[in-house]
Image (cartoon, rainbow, N blue to C red; front, side, top):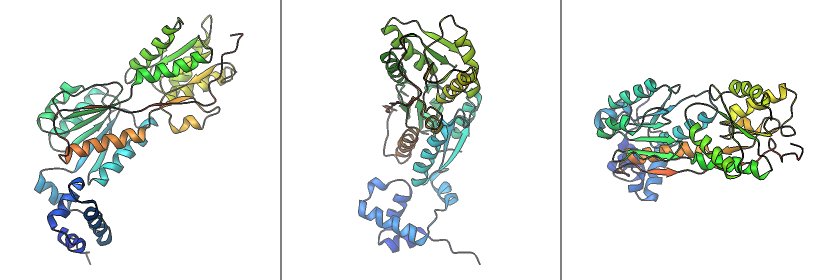
Length: 341
């Protein structure tokens, strides 16, 4: 026997409210309903096991109730917790999330934009490596909101494009300055093309320049463990090897630590190492990695909340930029520079 589908009217009867009020809650309008009433409706939904008929909703509202969440590399441990936070907030508001790994390729980013323009997604949230506000204008004209997680302050102008960003210049400057404060002057940086790298490099260079220290930059192929390992030999072949190395992300930093260990060097006894992102593995390696926390879960949750506010018409008008916090996480991979260095 098939189970009878619970209706909105039954939820309304159980909660003692009008069916229109139940519909308002289900469509993201909780802030328009008294708290006690909203809680009573939500309790009735749980007790009755009500499940919205998404197909009927889509036909009635011309919405898909699906959000696209794009990231450039799902294999990078930075992104899964961000995606999970997006899913948690979006689902609580009645939206499903399709996660798309664009592999950092411009054509894949354009494909997501095209699908949204065709009505497959009600909104898009995530990390664009290549597309700018002009590339997203079509979505703006269709009133399809976009929330970008950025590496620097940007603004979408008149379009409904919102930006959350970490001040990567300030974060890199703070990390390099911490090493300088420990007496290091030969501080190297492992760079990689794209993403946050230009801004992290700018912060590092500014900190080195503030004390008249010469920068040492090695360009790696990408943001991977292997790239970090491969960079080590290039550092050690220099006439004066660095006493500290900053990597553009934690995966590269852990690769650097592995490469140094393979050369018989200790961290931080011989060379201090620091990274970026504070992925889970950074606290588990030996020694634990000094890094910059960007609070991926907060980023994802806030990005989804901003998008849902747009979709529920709680927020209108042009896009805005919102700075999110970072924090230095000091662990055992960094130590003072030895006097004989």
